[in-house]
Amino acid sequence: GEGDDQYQCKGTLSGHKRAVWMLQYDEEAGRLYSCCDDKKVICWDVAELRTIKVFDGHKDKVYREALYLDGRETPEGGSLFAGDSTGTIYQWDIAKKELMQSWKGHEGSVWGMLMATFALISGGLDGMVKLWDPRTRGLIRQLYRHNQSVCSFSVQANVFYSCAVDNIIKVWD
Image 1 (cartoon, helix red, strand yellow):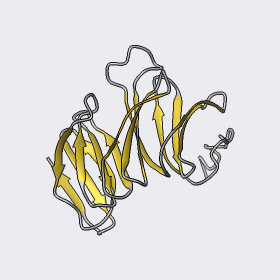
Image 2 (cartoon, helix red, strand yellow):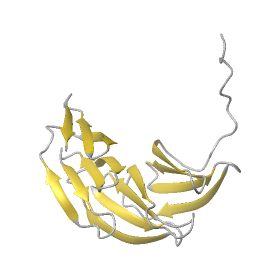
Image 3 (cartoon, helix red, strand yellow):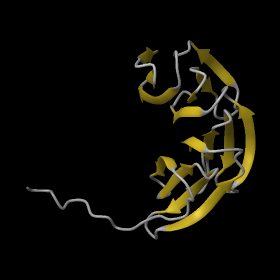
């Protein structure tokens, strides 16, 4: 039918050594970020199909990532947050490719992460939903827990939704 050939593979990004868990795209910089079981986050130039930066220094498998780009002075600036299987959350300076800070965010793996306008939202194996200030890394609020691992979020204005492997979607405002 019409549109069957609309999408064609234009190339392959190779560099990770294990399962890739999540992708984030930075529209302004034209960069794609991927996180992986190989304990790395890679920043890709998708136009040239090449690695730009490797964020290496996570303790274990990196399952989730989020970009904080507010107030950056150049397209190369901003922060990259990543969560790994130890429950640690990392904040990287994108331009310098340096680890700014890391802290214990959850008991067990960080399975959910999303940057909202009001906070960095994280969820984990511990069933907790946490809101962090991306500028100070301070915990804004720890919300009622799911019964099992929190794995994803969606935001619409000041309302957000969390889902977990307990078959439940929660609505927060």
